Image (cartoon, rainbow, N blue to C red; front, side):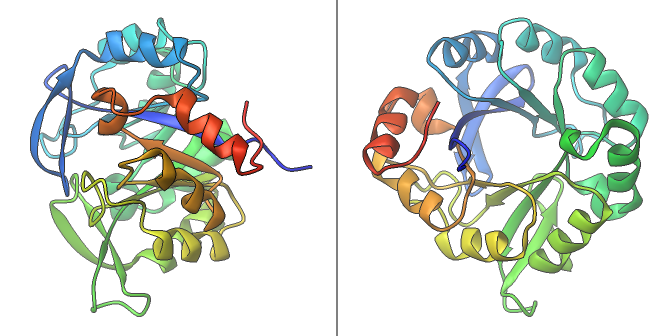
Length: 253
């Protein structure tokens, strides 16, 4: 039996506000995270993702108080990422209302972190967040970045995803930096490649600009689709996305 496709709004948070840019640059204010969380929960979001996009750059922890206030507004799974460096950080975030935890930069610096989270809390808690750029320096043509897309590594994105799954990651959140904020559609090649290698669910992120962009991402292999600015700006609604997916024969909640 096929699982329902999930539609996930994303709150990129900096300085206590939701922000959004293009290609991870030129961030602008997009609203209050608590208000947006409540709105999306009411509108039928399947999950909510909260990413503290400057925590790693600022070398600090996630803003726990803000996470708790957001968690109090939603009755759907909440994934939190940004500034997570240890299993203790995960325990604290779970205690503040998170259901799943996204790891990126710290896991690249110390891959055992993925195994530590999965072993202690279960693979379903550990979401590997990959900020991916196209590059001719890696065999797959895709490289992972750290620090909110600011620092390019030498890691092949597909190899890193495969390694993290082996270590215990229970889900892949695949952010295309090239597509991010462009509203030109998801990176379907990247989505398909991740789907082919992954034994865990893949969330496609980056590039949604219209209702018609979501179906192709699912067709390419995504189990869930994530978007930010098109929802924040009211250009499209979660209900419209779900209706379009249902019209294509996809199972939605």
